[in-house]
Image 1 (cartoon, rainbow, N blue to C red):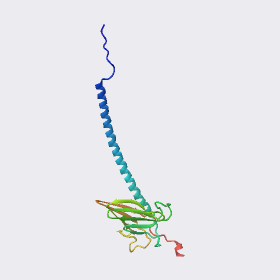
Image 2: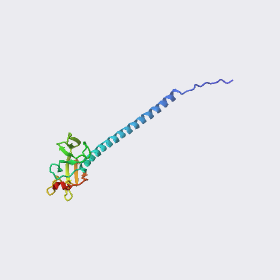
Image 3: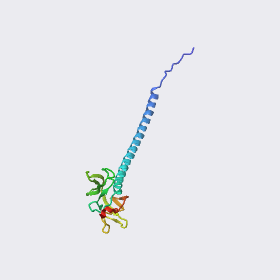
Image 4: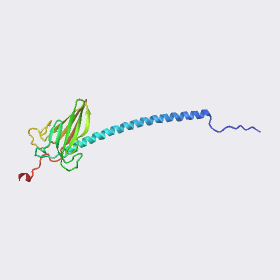
Length: 196
């Protein structure tokens, strides 16, 4: 009779150590890949958030300018300078849409930065954006005039709206221009009640 040699079932210590080493290396590599992925995801979300905020600011500006209302009454007429615009809009940012509301956009500058503020009758001024080391200015363009720094220019009657309003943002090495167009009647409509 041949003696039976019993071999223990299971893994040897060396086999277990090799498997644990391989598993730990794979875990470390996966964690590094996850870290790189999460950093990229965070950067994409941050940039997307900045783009959304910039887009909102631009849309707010365009929306309030788009429906400015012309008036030949000097108290209600649109006025613009290189650092401020003011007039009556049918689409205020805070108040009820469709209600004629006095709105204004103001540039406030100091030696280190420039800020764009929105003002609306009945509400506190609201800072929309700040740019470091930048210079901001408004310019206006009429049907027959080029870009001017003050509205209404000398030959334009009071109350007429510009066709386009441009906000220029001069940052070091970069110049951005934000254009807004007046979409409704630029000149006050004649009304028979004015004759009475």
